[in-house]
Image: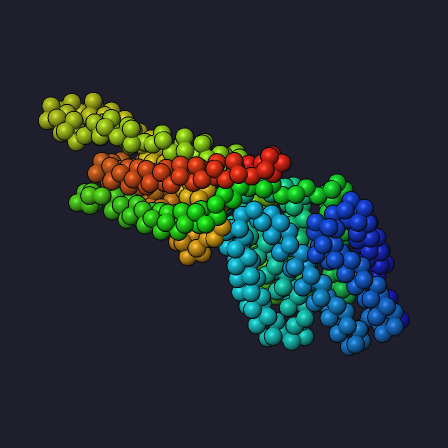
Length: 269
Length: 192
């Protein structure tokens, strides 16, 4: 059987060990109850590692069947990763129903838009279609997470450090995969024989780093995100719908005034 | 392919910078701001100083000095006027920021947001900041316009009065609801 490079095997082993440790921490600290989807994502990653090892062992590294099976399992992991991220954002924003309603639209919109563009681009380059599609998913994911975090920052909503570490880890990993996939493509085109080893080990090393940060962040029981008073939701919603158009109208007038700043005839208000 | 690497590398760098910026918490104080703090800020509007600003920017002084031939004094007056105008413009910006902060608080507490409303406000804010910079640059270049400044001032103070009333109303409702919540729950609740 064709074998993986030594560095890849080592980093893969360390990655699996780190995932097992993180999974144990999630169980022992009781955090699996607060973030069940995230816990399932970690468990699925461990299962995927075992599955991929079995596939490589029985079918070899480069057979069509092994490629189809391993990338299919990756699709499942990607779906759970998106669900785990949505779970974290929902936990952060659950006290802010309006912002969460806005946030999931931003998340879905940004993700969908970039993904469609990326998939169209991947279809034009068939030999690398799967890799480019994978890169597109990670790019879409990274952009969507950053867009949501910008929204949270815009409304000055506090995020607990543990949630920052978890979301930051997801985003950092996606960004790394985007770069590494692209770099691997460049190395392949230039005929570098080690492109696959560099691609796999760099991806795995970045994932190990993220796992380490997550394990440190989750070593203590996860705190409940701060609750914010939502007094009289109906009245507050009414206030919002009364005030928001007025604010926008006043801001529009203000912009008009500012635009005509040097025209003395426009002084009435 | 190399171009792709450069473009994606730049995009990833921007994403990572934005990630670091959003996860870093420079706005901690903003997040902890209470209703009363926001209201307190809204009460100290620039409009209180409008008469003095009007006086400082009055054209009559300049015309008088020009007729009297006191050019050194006139130049000094122009310089100081520009300084006053810029300070006033900065004050207007602070008021604008304060009003936006209040608008954010209203949005944060509302259980439902209008995507169109929020995006429109974002667009208006970007436009305001652009125009503000243009006016600032023009003032640095040596121009000043009292009519424009006064109109700007009136616009902001009008918005402030309306928002202040809405915030007080919401604060009273929130306090009333807090009274109705059990003591164990109340200990975990705060305004932010």
